[in-house]
Amino acid sequence: MRGLRFLQLSAVLFTLAAAGQAHAIASLELEAGGGLNLKGPKSPLLSARVGLDLLSSFTISLRGQFALGHDYEGCGGTGTVNPACSAAAGSGYKSWALFPELRLRAPIPFVQPDLAIGVGLANLTSYADHTSFVDKTDGSKLYAQFGIGLRINIPTTSFYLRPEASASMYTGVTGPDADKLFIYNLQLLIGWSAGF
Image 1: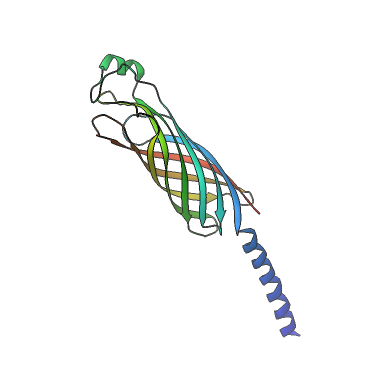
Image 2: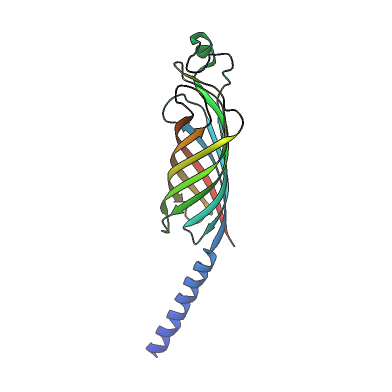
């Protein structure tokens, strides 16, 4: 009798585990949020992402980011700045980026550290911090981003929070930083995930 009950209980637990695993095989993720860059001129940064999560540990995504700074046309030439113009406009930068992103995260239940890397296209319209001025890029150029995040799943919901620190590299720019510019960002993202 005890052996039969043990087998029945084992079968129920196995079925529940299998169903949970099947639910976690693939899920759609939507994510949006914003933040600021950590070093240099400050501009609001918006981010949106749609992705496909596999086995709750690997995500393939398409992500867009927008820095909502000012245009600095006429503030100076390459490597220089007009102080009066810069002071009137304030420091900041303006850009957009669109890139596929791969994300790997630890498959643990509630708090999941992750790594993300993306390579795509971006256009840096302007960048100024009162002391240097970077000319805008000539069309869309190669862009790369590496991020470290912490996904915090909200219990009994399909939502999660994800603080992220990232480093972005713009190429094809002109100015004191040669043809590359590195920007470091801190963002807070809100996400939604639904399995299928």
